[in-house]
Length: 582
Image (cartoon, rainbow, N blue to C red; front, side, top):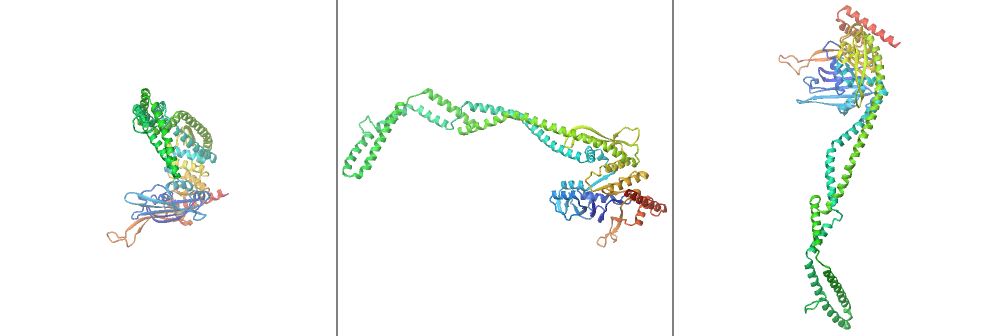
């Protein structure tokens, strides 16, 4: 419930503070007096769109602050958003609007904490619902019509709708995953062909040893120099062990050295270690001579093996150029693409799995949507009978109304397209409400609709902006009674020109424009004080002021008949309230 509204420099309002009460709060005044500005200020405070025109001329900023009575729903929202409560009884929402030469800036706060627009939208639905005769456009919007029907359907329907939103998200994810895989299928096939060729090519060369190329290069050198190696090995053998020339071999020299050291040891045993070293050297030399001789004898030319080695070297170097640059890197690449190829070969099965997953989630979504459709049809039957009953007292005794539900593509809100079908006159076919309803008929329909859904609506304050335009007499009285009926469940704010509606108010405010002098600080060219137009609101708290306002609405404050009519309206309204209390 809206407790207090404070406005500064908003449109024609310089400063204004209003305190609203429970029940029916009515704003009256001449056309153009500024009644709708107050509703615009409420809308702005709750995150509505604003432009630079809402800032009062001559000022740089506007501010609107709305204080609402707190409840369990608001307390839970504040806790979810981690916003502290000012007190247990109220929530303060404010918005500051400023303008530059290029844009408009605004900052919204809840209990002094800055909040973004998305948070304000979520909070707005918990606080206020604004209904105006201009909602013909909304009646033609399938989403709004669907929301009205679902709201009337109650908790079970809304819970099913929430369940559909979850299933629809899962379906969207499965569908997107499948489409992504299908989109990349051509790339997958191209990559599959490439990797298949590369795996076959690398597999054909039998890559196992990363040192194979180095070993082959060494073997090629040996095979190319067999004769040289034979000659050099024989030369080493001669130098070490058996020299064909007259020069002694190394073995002979060591033998002479050994004999001399033996003689020396007989005189000095300290030389024994040296003798042992010479003997060890001689044994080593003999082993080297034996092995080099065997090596030389084993060497033989092998042109066929040399050709094989050359071919293998060329093959490995080609592989290194394509997949290396080293053989070790080529082998690592081969192992890597074998895994990638296995994944690509398994992707076909992945597509089948994704298709099955998509079909499974679509089946769940379809089933959930079917259940929601059944709930909506039940809610539609209830709304049809309830709405017709609400419209009959509003001088629409012969009205026909039907909720048309036709299947459509499943979405997060179900698989139904919902249209309100309407026929105000007997013998006329049902047609879409938004296309055929007159302004007065639309006003009454919206009021009756709010009466049907208000008990399920989370908003604590309902605002009606001139919803009684285009009606009079008995219909206006019926609208007044319907507004009062709604005000017993929710706080109602209503802008009206109808004295019958205004008479039913629990709190009555008169809105008018006044011309004031700005003071000595601002002079016009002729020296007089600058005059400005401002909006003023007066709370009509006593019977005399209310009677005078109702008389003015009815036909002129000075007319005796109008005063009498106003008194009769107030008496009639009092009697109606008393009869409802019984």
